[in-house]
Length: 286
Image 1 (tube, rainbow, N blue to C red):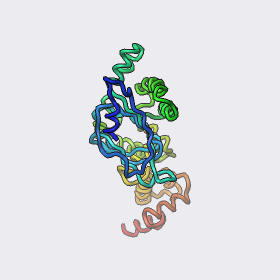
Image 2: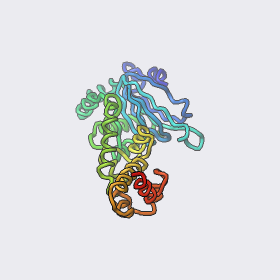
Image 3: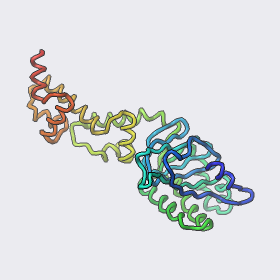
Image 4: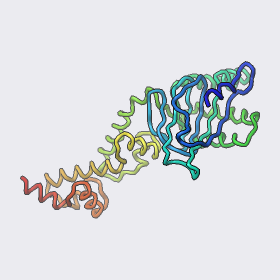
């Protein structure tokens, strides 16, 4: 596909100023790792999996909108289990040449600051929240439009790509920060384990969406957020059962469980014994 897109571009001759591409295909048919000298804005409409940006591989989710700068190696590897009723994934992509941006700045002085900001982007960028909704609405509107009408929609998209709120860099050098992000998540869970914790709480703390948080944590630990949290709470409960004379109910609430029967079930599932049996065994072994 890249070669065909490149052939469609002829900035000097003016065949296209940008390419709009909506595709549905089997996950296995998605393009592998590649790069080109153009900007690429991709919207994953159906599917999830792992994306690679330069040397960084991380989870992506359905609905993600990502801007890839020129000359960055990139690919999306789709999960064959997350497909539509036809067994396919789908995405919308627009690709535009740096000379398209230069032409915008030359023809429309009002776009000069937008183009300058875009040209300063060196990292792939993820768009979320309301900003993502505004971008995808314009991408969706392109579907039934002529080439000329799509140009007008592109001019509406470009300023959105440099808005700060709702956008964040991903991949590349930031991949080295995955251990830092993972540490922030686990530190938050450990520090807050005694109170009720929601996914929204954790996501807001680390600046991720709920689904991105869950995918990231599962990918790097093999556990869900709440499996990790429950194991930590049960570890704390084991320690308190061994060291204190607090009742099982007191310990249940002290380590962050809000329901005693659920605490007892979770404890036995993880430890293999009830809290009372665990305490008796520990005292019997002392």
